[in-house]
Image (cartoon, rainbow, N blue to C red; front, side, top):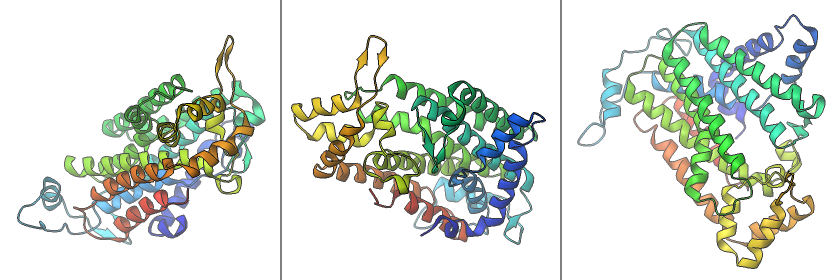
Length: 365
């Protein structure tokens, strides 16, 4: 299934987000700064985080709550029964501030864009979404400052309504993202990293913004705490699954599908779950070979891995049970995400969230 099909119930909302992103990124009176903002809109991503804001808000308050299933009601179903009823008109709840939803959704995408700008500096990436990166066009110094500038735009949007819960939700996510990225960089080339520590990094780097997007939708929808928690946990599970799949595709994916050169993370020395699974499944000689492919620290800092070894690494992954092990872990997070939706009434929005899990975790690696 294509993303546009999954997003169909919120297509108009996402168009409004794009309009706000376009106007926000080009608002500077300085022609050079405004031009860089316009260039960022030339490489749109999947808009997954804005979609989660809308879908979470709508799935949580999209109709009459279901009664308990089975002999006893869960805390989530109790909360669903007690919540205020949404008054729907054209698929939109009057109880929610639509403008706040749009601004929160745009802010989540701006945070994501800013993080990618910084990531491309760290990874020395030259292509993203089949276009030159900011780092490629302007260098690292401008990229770092531009990323900070885009972060500030996100906080401006969040601050317009002055709702403390949303501001805390976003600031905590950014804190976690930065900490996760810092830990990840510090752990480069460390094949002794534990699987649990990798998951912690994935939760912080990626899961935290997915979770914040879902939580923001529930907060704006004036949902009680159990529903907010369910949505936040849905986003965290989806985000971790997304990161693991992305890490696999970095090694075994093709440039046409990725929109960038494969192997960027490996060449930067990033330790990912498929590499850890591979390391655990091979002998000492192959493990030393993997270490060599990742590059080694030198007197002036680490040198990058050899692109010539990428095909060998890909072959090793395919011929081992590492990908099978990785798929099992992805499936467990996909199942965990869907389980968090059990208490919500069936709707087009809940269905889109479920389909989004399938889209992210489909076995195409």
